[in-house]
Length: 256
Image (cartoon, rainbow, N blue to C red; front, side, top):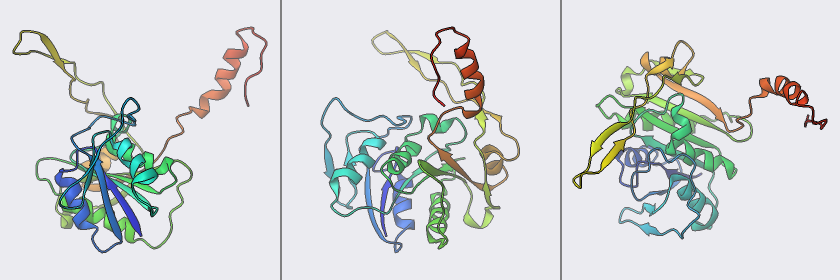
């Protein structure tokens, strides 16, 4: 099995190193990750300049681009032999609910899936103890499962692991995405040259965070595994939207 590892925290991230070390012996591992932190990059591709790839003494490769760039290059150009799957992480902080819209960790996994490879995004719900080895153990457990998992097209697993030692993990729960409350306001600051600058405010707390959600599972000490797919169509709204469009009076037909 050939496994591609990537992330959005950068090639020197301790979570990436822990993932690499935790998966030793499962197959051939290659690491291609951003040369710096690209948290919040989502699925951005760099299209306005060429990308530079560097190989580090430990064999990891870095790209001066986004997480999506890294996976795209690795699968579509850097290696002659194909990969069997993509693992993205271990992210330094949680990717729960709405976080996945912005997450470069999830984006690296979805890029792998776009290119035809099963993919997992894994994040540590960090409370300051940095139990990356627990998250790596969870990924290893998933990869060692012999029964094949069929998720359907353009689907990945989004995994969030409580920041606990392995022997304190309560179990694994299959969850849905919750939702966060509105983010905090932008934080103004003044730079040394006297100009006004702004920090993006912190993410909101869990708003929809009850039983069945990823928020609830990790709060109870469980690993959360959520199947995520990239079809963002609101299917249940199609009928009412067709009726509304028909009422505009253009006389055209809507796609079925």
